[in-house]
Length: 306
Image (cartoon, rainbow, N blue to C red):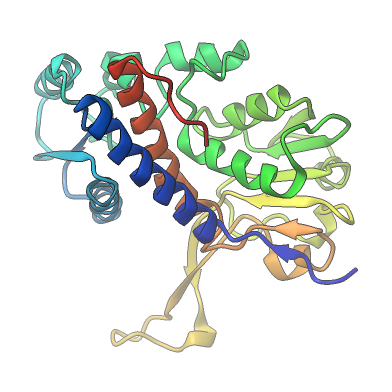
């Protein structure tokens, strides 16, 4: 087969951000409502700081009111819960995001379930999980990574996936399970596979749509991919890259790779997302889209579809 089409998540995300920005300006002009996104971060984890900074920067660029609460790592669970409850009551806040992971002394589940489901733009609250699992995708806030992945699939295959076999490798609550629900809602026949699946390569080779979300670098080789499949690689893994030389401290430089061996898979797939530049940019774009939807609901007008 010819080399697979490279699905450009960066370009798709830019289009979504452009649309969100335009719709935000229209919403504010019509109703006076400015979408508000509040991000809460506890501690100084470097990766989390980068993610939060990127989200805040994008929110501001979209015309949102961007609020950031930075709390020290020793912040008590009770204090964090109060911050969340105060944001629930703030009419100028339409989206609340608590950056994970949280320190070990804080119950992540309790914090997530304290967020108002109608401001839960991450889509992790059980109310939103239930809405999605029952097929109420219009009411649910869908977790941003699977929502972005689904948009990329639709770019290639369209909205109706009737007759398509989809395999999702990974069963996390954040990606694997909601991804399967979205594929079901689009009429695909869906298998959720994982580390204990018998003959995992064989199961994956039956997929017209293969979604990898296992968190293991380049685990899915070309042997896992059906000729002509659409491959969505959700994984982001940093590995050593000796071919790039050494850092000043003498250790090998690193690079980002997905859960799929891109070079091998691209020789068989019809279309595939790269890492980086595939699903990653879509996650923040869909966070902005969810926040705008929440603001539109608050203002009593129909939210745009993305």
